Amino acid sequence: AASSSSSSSSSSSTTSSDSENSLHQTREKELQLAKQRDILQNSRLNAMFREEDMANRKRQEQIQKLMEEDDRKWREERKKRMMGKYGEVKSVEELVGLMDDERREMQREMDTKVNLAKAAGITLTLLEPTDESDYSSTEDNSSAAGGMINGSGKRDNTESRGRFSEDDDKTKTKSNFNPIIGDAKKSWFESEQDFDLETELQSLPQRDDDNQNNNNIYDQRNKNNNDNIHSEDPDEDGLPRVINGKLTSRQQLMGISVGSAGGWSLEVFPGDFVVHRKYGIGRYEKTVLKSKTKLTPEETAASEERRKEIINGLMNEGKSLEEIQKAVADFGTDKDKDPVSNPLAALLEIAYADAMVHVPIERAYRLSRYRAGDAAVKPRLSRVKGEAWAKAKHRVEANTVQMAEDVLALYATRETLNRPPFDPSAEGRVRKFAESFPYEPTPDQKKCFEDVENDMVWRSRPMDRLICGDVGFGKTEVAMRALFRCVANGRQAALLAPTGVLAAQHFKQVVRRMGEGTEHNF
Image 1 (cartoon, rainbow, N blue to C red):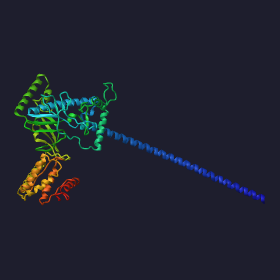
Image 2 (image 1 turned 180 degrees about the vertical axis):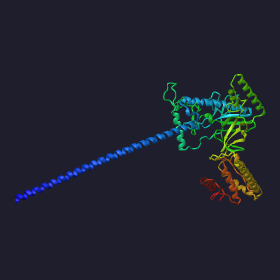
Image 3 (image 1 turned 30 degrees about the horizontal axis):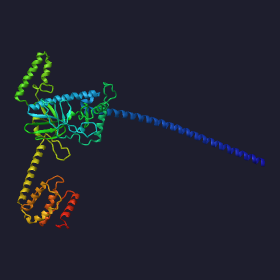
Image 4 (image 1 turned 120 degrees about the vertical axis):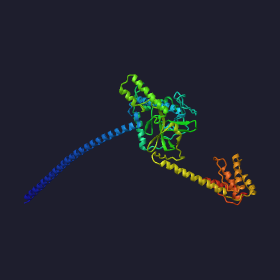
């Protein structure tokens, strides 16, 4: 019995051990299957994520390419808009060459304008811009451009005003009027545009004429500045400047001064606001040469005769019929450069809200510079069409007449007012008070003392007087003696001051010189 019992227990323990091993193996297989499923699922997810990442990367690359293409097109359009005819230049030399051509063309046009103005009895002078900081790409605003440009193109720091005429050297003068160009603060976008334009200028290559590689526009400008540190001409290097988001030469910003022997004169710079008697507030842009629209009988006859001579000359040269017809078609247009066949007029171009007005230079007396006192707000341009300017003039005239009538009525009323004069016997007290003044009165102070005494003591009208003088020249003492005279005659007096500090100072002086504790004991 004992033997069978032990063998049965051994058999049961073996069976339980086998079942545990089988269960463990099953769990191991399940774990391995779960791991394989996880690995398979992760691989599928990774593949799906990689595909999505690749698709996103491709989309981002396409978007980036589209944005770069749009940015490139926008920059090219902006470059053409800002740089104008300089937008296609490929090197610094080409840029400088274009600006030299423009400078010569402007000089030629200016000579023509001067001659036309001289023929009309008008003096025309070219004015140098006075604020160098507006015409330089650097941030150094400590110096100011200006002065005389002599015949050699160098600047003389003299105040003489040479006239720009055919008999003199091509003289440019410094204006007494400081133009306001680019004074408004730029937005971040405008500043970024200027920076981008400067960067594009930096990228312009320079030819290796002097065995110097990798030179850009600013290397050349800095070299010129180092060679001539004290040069006062910011355009000496022949390079353009970025001004208000545009590539501009200094010649384009020069002003003009026109005048006649009759006494009228006008000084304006591009961008200045002017007022025309008929059209109102406009903005001066530049002077231009245009074909005359109204010719005198003498000019008409001379033009017809000259055109006949031109046609006969072409026929004598054996030109074809088409060439002669083309020359005839160009008569009276910008292509007609003959001053007799196509008489020109020098005009001031004025921009208005709805039109561009050209004022003949001999009628520049109809213009005046816009003045608004201390107002910093730019005026609104008038409209040529409509009656707004005429109504504004009539309204101002009516207000001026009304103001004059009110002032006349006020002074007429003051002339009719009367009051008893102050007691002359109290003037001894006033003179004793005057002795407390620790300084010797100036001649102007003595005159004011006498005038105020005459108004208060010897006249029967209320005093109506204004004392003017610089700071520290004794106006307060004049007021002090008037205050004392008034109170000494049993009247009341008030002293007004613009600030609390100044009022406190005057109060201390009044108390110290005539208050309680003094011999006057007011």
